Structure formats: C-alpha cells, structure tokens
Image (cartoon, rainbow, N blue to C red; front, side):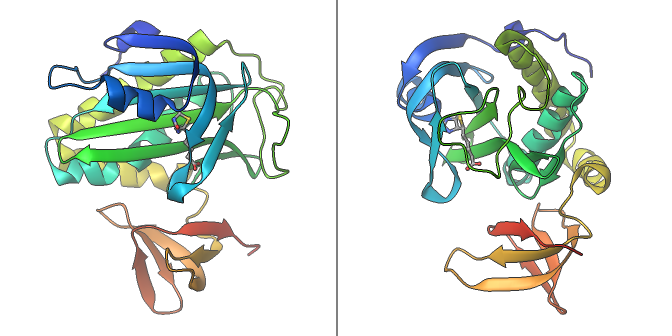
Length: 245
Ligand code: BTN
C-alpha cells in the first residue's frame, strides 16, 4: 500500500528542541489511549539510548532522532520490528538517492560506515517504542566508523526525512499487520538484496562476550541471523562485525 510522503503520516508528532531521549519521552507520554504511530522527535538528545545499553549522541541540529509507537498484535510482528524498520529506512533513503545496506540487525550503513541506528524497546507484548537515529551532519566525537548525510553530499531537510520515514514505515508495518507470514517471506526476499551481512564473513560478539566467527548465510523466519561456524548457529542478539571475505 502507498502512503503519502508526509510527516502527517504520524498520528500526532511532538517536536522538541531538547530531551534526554525521545524513546524515554515517548514512554513518559504513553497511556492506554496513545495511538499507534504517535511519535516524538527532538533536535538534541542529552541521554540518547543505543542498543545493548550504549549511549547514542545527538548534538543539537546534527541528527534526526525520532521515536514511534507501534502496537503489534502477535509475536510474529514483534520479532520483525527492528529488521522491518531497517528495510523501511533503506527504502526511504533510496527516495533521496542514498544507497544503503542493512547490517543485521539494526544498523544502516553507507559505503561501510554507519549512517543510522535503530532501537526497538518492548514495553509489553502489544507496545513497542521504535527509535530511529540518522546522522545528518558530522558530530564532534563521531567515530571514524560513522558517516552522515552531509558527508555523503546529500542535502535533505529533517521534515522531508521524517515524511519519507513515516510513509515507508506505514507501508511496511501495514503489510506485517495484514498478513505476517506473507510479509515475512517478502521481507526475507528483500533482505537478500538489502542486507550486507548475508554472504559475509562475520565476527559475532554474543551478549556474554563470547565471539563466534563464520559466514552469515541466512536470516530465519523469526529474524535470527544464521551463521555457519561451520555448523549453523542461530543468533537472536549479537554485535556483528563484517570481516573481509
Ligand atoms: C544503535 O545503533 O545503537 C541504536 C541507536 C538508536 C538511537 C535512536 S535516536 C532516537 C531514539 N531515542 C533514543 O534514545 N534512541 C533512539
């Protein structure tokens, strides 16, 4: 389904100049009547949250930080939120001529560097806060492994970016709500072209700190990464590094 490219696709958008974290702010504003696709954005985050307990720096005016409320009705949808958001983001960026690739499970890379990160927080089985950060300009302490739209020579305003994200997310999410099994099969096919992790030698650091080395061969139908070490291992959560093939 096609949705207009407009930030009006959010069902209520709170735009702040500064906040600790848009994910935390959305949680504070959440009540039983908060609609799906309610969103919070901010020019600056003073305590942004990254994956696996890390910080996510958002200096004033340097990045897009947005958090969006989703209401899954089954675990099939919940399992796929992060990857679905990565695909939707890849598709939104493509509208501005930016060719990105998804590093499983939540990074958007351009030319091997991180442009964007996704943090989906499960509040309860039917409530997920989906946080998206996109680097627009270089920040003071950006690591060498990061890039930004400005460094890529792409000038997109925040509103345009928000509009494209809202429209693509609505489209991917409506697919996943309407028929999860059909949508997941389609997402898996799309991953074969959009996911740079597949077919790549990787080092996967597991939550306990153990490292696994192998080739990433598939993403299964619950969104886990399968790596051959050489025996196949399914990873639900890990930090993945792409190694040279
Ligand atoms: C990661 O790559 O570690 C995930 C980063 C997610 C950052 C976004 S910015 C908007 C939202 N609010 C937060 O505090 N974090 C997410």
